[in-house]
Amino acid sequence: MDRLSLVLVIIGALNWLLVGLFQFDLVAALFGGQDAVLSRIIYTVVGLAGIWSISLLFRDRQNV
Image (cartoon, rainbow, N blue to C red; front, top):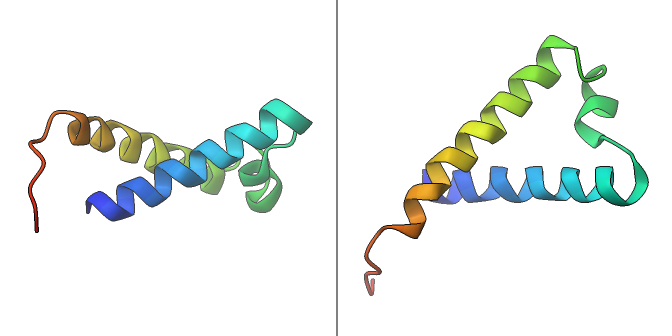
């Protein structure tokens, strides 16, 4: 679950990079605009992954 969350957070960060540099929202372009249901689902899932990833900051590191 941690790796999946991290991947989704990276995807979200890359999308924000595109928005910041080029004013291009890749998620919106691929899934029908910012108001499309599928785009909103993806934004929500990426946001939830970001919330989950906050827990990574507070976990003890384990050598595995």
